[in-house]
Image 1 (cartoon, rainbow over the protein chains, first blue to last red):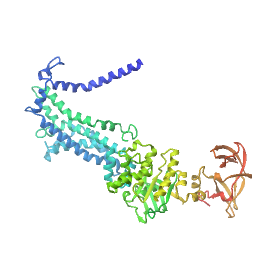
Image 2: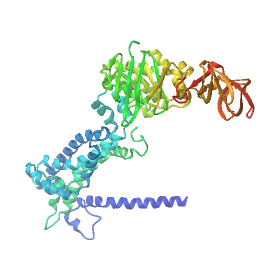
Image 3: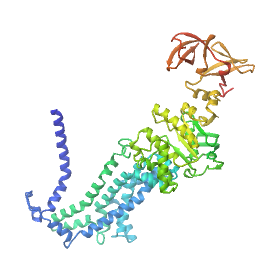
Image 4: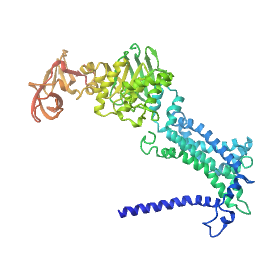
Length: 279
Length: 350
């Protein structure tokens, strides 16, 4: 009994350590966002302080409001997610089901695009976008994000489609459904867990992206990740405002995560028990 | 109603690369008939069903349904209902939605769908489960749901791909009887794939026996049982299957382990044959073929004896109360009409 209790205690301690390592930066950001700039810089760090929403008021409604930037981020992320899913679902279905020449190569190519270091292709992307006049435009940045999110989404979705037995589709054909109707009525409802997981990942990647956004856009299109950087300058870093923007930028992602959590957990466990995830 | 559902296969060939899954298959199914495709696994029976359903295309040959060539018609335009071995129920839909799906696809008005679904569910006794999801049903209930989905639309053909193989033994026997009644009451043509000869024997009006991509015999179960066309069919049909013993044919008699048995054949001459003897057709007699009882399998009302006839193994079925002891020596014989003769080279009936 005591040995068992000790093991549980040890397990708990280790879990807490991991949790702390993960949660510390977030807690620190939240704390800093509620401090004044002088409190942030106080040494030793103040654990007891008078919380203020000044930083939030400044970044939201001050002269350098980040509201337009949040809107930019939303447009880019939502746009990327919608276009990605519209193209990835049929593509993944085709890769999982149809037999066609070059299928193997297509599958490899999809994966290979994930192996490139982003920095390596930033100059070619810049040149391409400049030539078609899409630098610093929404369509330009969404196009660039698509080049990463689409292969990723397809690769993720294929495994979900492959899990669905052929007979299910054949039964639908014999019941009089067309291929498209079968996809819509029979297949997609069964992979909705996988679709939820993919949506979250694609949205997250687009929302958090910084490198391409800072090089390929920045003036008219300036997502919050880039705008956040304004608070870091040569003379000083406005830590409280930076923290406040960070917390604000985290919120949509957290909300999305909570909303889709059920599907994500379900989606991640598919395949652990045969058929257990979906039935 | 029963004028619909006539099927003809004309020289159907199916190649998988170099491998011939079907080597020119021909058969006809009459409207309203319960037709079984029987054979061991890999013999081509399931491929035949898939080609009939339109899920696979034949490499050569023609498929006719009601005298219309449907070889290149899409599965969904063939007006065929099918029950899959795995049932293939739609897991995200309720039982009612599953059964309603073919009706929705047929664009039946909503007001007609609900009562039709109810009626089909009642026929297979699952009308109390309409709001459940397939995952909440037992194996037998899932099977009934698949049946209901197949019969709800009055299709002209009803295909069943080993529908009973996932049920336990007791449920399989019950469902088998109900299936036959259901098919009779609907008057629909049924094509039934099975590797279980007992299922085919009990269910089918007629059956086609498949062996390595070919149909070796088409006939009623009684015909196939009484006069199997080949050694392979003889060894496949019946439980326990027919004894197949190499023997010598001499002027109308066969010589097994030194003992002479009369046959119905009258041709003069001498040759090697394979003699087929049903375990149930053997009887004990004075002065017959000597045999030592090696093993007794008591089945209650009958028993199966493993006999050693001078080195040749023969199985025999005897009625209860007539069972010798293990190690006893008995003497057996068979009537001329119960002795089947096969050619050991061509493996066909002589």
